Structure formats: structure tokens, C-alpha cells
Length: 281
Ligand code: SAM
Image 1 (cartoon, rainbow, N blue to C red):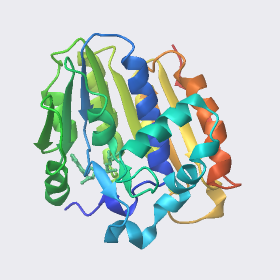
Image 2: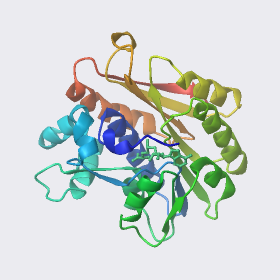
Image 3: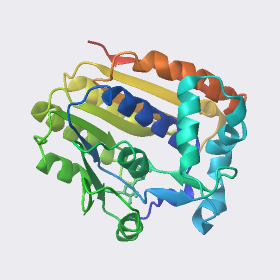
């Protein structure tokens, strides 16, 4: 049974890390006219009102989008300024932070006529919420398993493919399942750009995913991690957010490093960002 609901965590530091990375990748991909199929295997609700009861319970956005929004008029990095301007368009009024846009929002707002978007969501309640979002005609919502759904639609009908895999990892076996689906995806679409989010938890289960990706023989695996606290500072809960990008656009690492250098001090004095090639060319 699925119990995770992203509304409890909407707009937290991990969302900032994930969606800024996604936004940057999309912007690189949009430089060419060739059609893209985007797949969001774990879509969630799409748009999160911050005054929702679930979101108010933990108010995690106060350690994420909140401080960035506060500093929005003093930002210097052009990527960060553009990203914040996009966040502003998701608000009821440009003066107040009322909503946080999830991955379906970021993907659907970048969609051109020639592109396709497939959004998978398995939780009935979350899927119902996603169904209330207005989407362009070339975006399709699917109530079903995202990893199986992705495999079933390969090869994609467009020349390019970009996949976001963002599970809740409620089951430990999901780390391995993600690695297996990624290996299959890259077998069918060698040049696909694949983004995978993972949590940094004291138990360190993300090593299962990273090791399996390395063992698959796939090249060009880049990863970045945003740590809110040092690993030893807490016994429970997520202390950091990780992103793997396979076949990243050239220049992504430097572009994000510059933006993250401006973000980390806003998230607190213990916050830091690190990135490297998990597997090189
Ligand atoms: N990607 C979203 C975003 O960035 O806004 C957040 C997704 S949230 C971390 C994970 C979502 O995956 C939850 O909404 C959960 O209901 C859904 N989910 C869990 N297992 C799934 C599965 N096997 N297939 C599709 N969705 C699933």
C-alpha cells in the first residue's frame, strides 16, 4: 500500500535541488528543435498549495523554496533568476509564495508542439489531484506503475527521450528496481537523458542504486548532492538530496555549480553542494 504523499514535503531543499536540475536539463534540450518525449515515472500532484494541511504540518518549504523566494530580488546567478521567475508564474499573485510547482508543472510548461509528455502516478488520491491540473493536449496522465509504464512505451516515438525517475523509496527494493529499469531504458534508447532522484539517509540505501548503475556498464553518469546537514548530525531522516543525470548535456555541471553556490548559504550554514562523475565518458 502506498502511504507517501509529496504534499508533506513540497518545496523542501530536495525539491529545489531536483527541480532546478530538471529545469536546467530541459533548457539545454530545448536548444534543438528535434522532438522530445518526456517521461515522469512518479509524477505526484503537479502543483502544491503551500497552505494545504499536509504541507503546513512540517512546513519543509521553510528550508527550501522559502529562503530562496525571500532573496529573489537579490539573486545574481542568471539561471537562478530565470528559475525563480518561473516559480513566480506558478503563484496566485507575484508578491506572495502560495504554491510550489512539482515535476509535472515544470515538464508541461516546457512542452512544445512537437514534444510528448507522459506522467505516471500510482496513488489513486495523488492521481486524482493530478487530474485536476490543466495540461496541454500532448501531455498524458497515466494511472499506473511508472517503471513498468516507461519500459512498455520504449522505444519512444520521438528522436529524443528525457526521463525523470523520482520514487518515494517506501520499499527498499525500489533502489534496485530503478537501476534495472534504467539499464533497460538505455538498452532501448542509448542517448536518453535520465534523471534519478535519491534521498541521503543515515542507512545509506542509495548505494544500492549507485553501485548497480556503475555495474551496469553505462558511461556518462553524473551525480550531484545537496546536503542540508552533515551525515553524522542526525540519526533519523533525510540529511541530503541526490540527483543522478545520465547522458547530461555538456556544461550542465558548471551551470548548476554556479547556481548552487548561491543557493547553499541561503539554506543554512551547514548546507553544501558536491558533484562529480560517478562514471565518466
Ligand atoms: N516527481 C514529483 C515532483 O517532483 O513533484 C514528486 C513525486 S513523489 C517523490 C513520488 C510519487 O510517486 C508519489 O506521488 C507516489 O504516490 C508515487 N508512486 C509511488 N510508487 C509509484 C509507482 N510504482 N509508479 C508511479 N508512481 C508511484
